[in-house]
Length: 397
View (cartoon, rainbow, N blue to C red):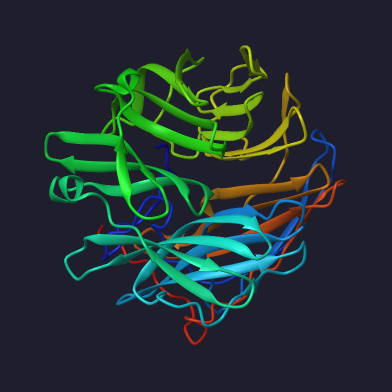
């Protein structure tokens, strides 16, 4: 995975996407719809704390986005959930099993069926993954215990693709001093089972996405997690049987490099951005390295792509791409997640650092696409850390 250069090592071991200590800010911005027009930008930092937002989803047929993230202090952490319908984000209170946890992914299957993926960390740093399910009125917890053979081998979940309550796919990973191993697992509503497609033998699984039980995609290759890149990359499509497809570009260790809307609308974004139309991959734009942090498809052929490259936000129309000039503030700013409800409604969220390394604080920011321009969306002060101010970065320097 390609990360921003300034990212701290937290005292508790958090999963990818939940690795920062953040304080507060309010961002005021207005970016024109034209991708070539100059952006006007004004930012003011507040002195209250703010959360780190790491995952986002939009309930189908609605204009409501759900976001998850983590609050950190020097001694603890807590998972957080928010919602937005285009205005300011609202933090949900009373979320169970959030203390000591990191929330990294959210799947909004409908307005009354929202799944939040959390990992609770023990004193020794090991984590157990679970889902919190919101039915519109209350929460339910679903434990996600891997088969004993995988648990004993040190495997844990690193990425999930949720289709429904009886069909969840995931990547499980086990790392040691000699490297990392990955495998696919599937949950049937009762228990996990290991999935071992013969085409996946000895490959490192990087990306996972699904839109239905017969539209599951995996990206993989001969990969080095230490170097963050893969050689001989390929994709696997599952529609009842497995099919192997070559993919363009060079694949990096980026779990958000794959997005799937249908068998004829699959997006890959890493060293290049490409769209699979059901028959072939179509490379988008000029092959400029993108190193995506998130992909948000909308419509039949379009997508917003956030990245850690020179252009943190780009819009692709199925053939070409154009950067959106967001003048992000602070040190090492990064857009962490994106979601789209329609061509007229989308969200991006991220964070940036201020101050010096090892003595810095950070703030969260968010934007909403109205169909004509990107507008700032207020990120509320953290309910967990609201009493703190100017929280220092927890880092080993």
